[in-house]
Amino acid sequence: MNWTALFDIAGAISLLLGALLAFIGAVGLVRLPDLFARMHSATKPQTLGLLLILLGLALTVRTWGAVATLLIVIGAQGLTAPVAAHMLGRAGYRSGTTEEDLLHIDELGEAYRRMQR
Amino acid sequence: MSIILGIAMGLLLAAAGLALTRVALGPTNLDRALCLDVVIVIITGILATQIVRSEDASSLPILVVFSLTGFVGSVSVARFMGRKEDSE
Image 1 (cartoon, one colour):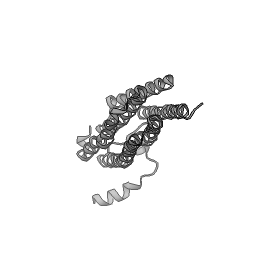
Image 2 (cartoon, chains in turn purple, blue):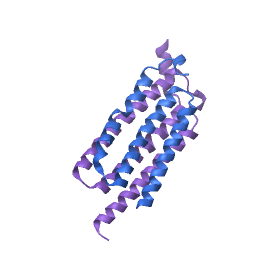
Image 3 (cartoon, rainbow over the protein chains, first blue to last red):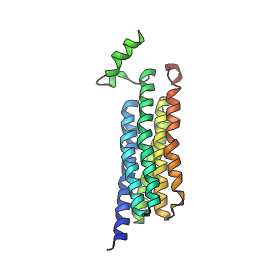
Image 4 (spheres, rainbow over the protein chains, first blue to last red):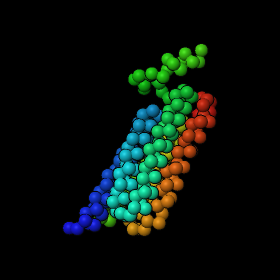
């Protein structure tokens, strides 16, 4: 077995793991009860899954240009995914459409009601 | 090798289908924006898998475009949906 075949197989396996994580995240999107719970499965497994898929791509393509491009993709994903989740969570809480009896701890509620007064 | 890539592609397509199911179910527009964000990430993964399958790296810049602009949709929906009556 030479290095080329080894890198190809490692890349394919990491691609498969990433796809599995993306699938698990999507199952969570369908099954979980409200927006805050769904945000967990929308951000964490998806980001790790995309990271593994891009790692598999880098292991298979093996050029520095491709690796630089994929680092840009990973950096942009790491910066934008938390921003989007934060904005959605904030809008969801303030619009009051999420079920508050599903929250175990409501740390924001007291400060928010004080601000309303 | 190609079997593993085929399984990965099938899993990604099933994930996209499930996320689109949640887009159809709702119940609020915020859920839909969240799930469309996930669909963008899954499309990025599908493109990456297709690059590996076809051994043709010429569509790599598309991945950068998707990752840089994918979040604009959900952020703008969240920004302009502050009130309760808008979100139904």
